[in-house]
Length: 386
Image 1 (tube, rainbow, N blue to C red):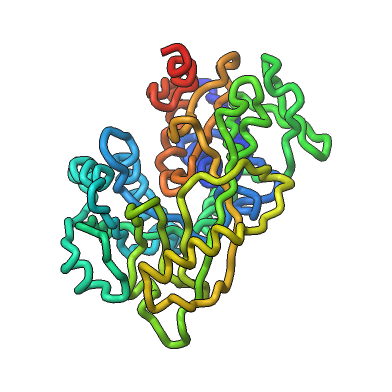
Image 2: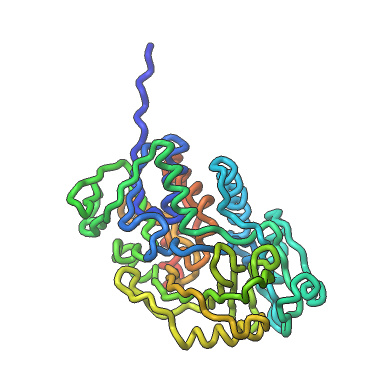
């Protein structure tokens, strides 16, 4: 007796950023038929996954799921790099500078790093100064160094994922999905900006900062885009102390949290303030950096990297975070539609986890799984009532 051929489920994924792209690729690789849709293209300048670089790190403080997730993501980034024969992750190492008086974030990270088997070492100020004399370690009492971490190429990685997805048989469509009717169950199809309709068995919306506007009832202000300014400073000609061969990615918890990435790729040294900025419209917002924040970052640069005191600003960019109230991701079904999945809320730290989040989402859809409570929308209702 001939067994009937089982039809592949068709999944439509909206958003070709790091969450959506990896979800589409994993779904395709485990047996789904997948259509991936994006309004402006993978890693575009309006997207939360745009820009040149993102930090890859495992240090996350105590009592959180992200160190384990980062460990899985590290393995997946490495696996796909080998498959694609291209580098996405630059293993410069990541250095965390712990402040005197409050090192709870760094101290609370050690057990998590150990459990996740992410290589790390604890360093004294004298050890750090010996390795990186170009850094002024004033007010730093100790540090964590993660040698296998570093930074990821952002927009280039998004494009690489979509390229692999298409090469393996996925369908990519560059078009906008119209928001009308998305929260009127049942969702029978998507209407695209060119008038076409896309019908699927399952729908995944990985819309980044637009998730709240696409789903005002289910998400609304649970995802809040904020303006985040990024600055690149140029070292003197011939001075290689600030490239990735001689400087790690760093996170600095002295005073407020600033971080940076060494100046590779013909760009300068990247410096950014992790403080959440003002509300921002990712579609029509003018991407002009704050001059006040630039002055503050210059003061920081002169203090922490004295040789760059007079370094010129060679480039700047406005990104955005897609912030949730608790900074945890959203990975859940729509409250009123079983076949509609919502994912996002990267909150400034999501990019590195893309391969692992995509893998998780693909399993949830095709294996009819249930997301952990930390990702569910119901947690916000519990917080309000609790």
